[in-house]
Image (cartoon, rainbow, N blue to C red; front, top):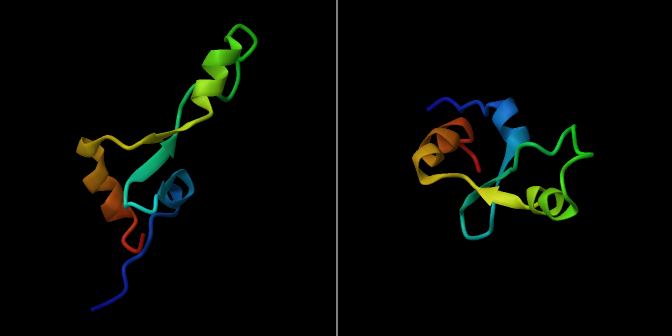
Length: 65
């Protein structure tokens, strides 16, 4: 069997936890932060688990994670 290539764009955006879940960064934390509350910005800093409907696609992009 030939080796599979990793989608490098996906490798930069997702990582796998110890229990095997795939986590991602939340959106809306790049710019226009002045009007957002501190609590909102703090909650956007946390990692989010990838939805189960998208998980299979992400796993195909990251064959060795």
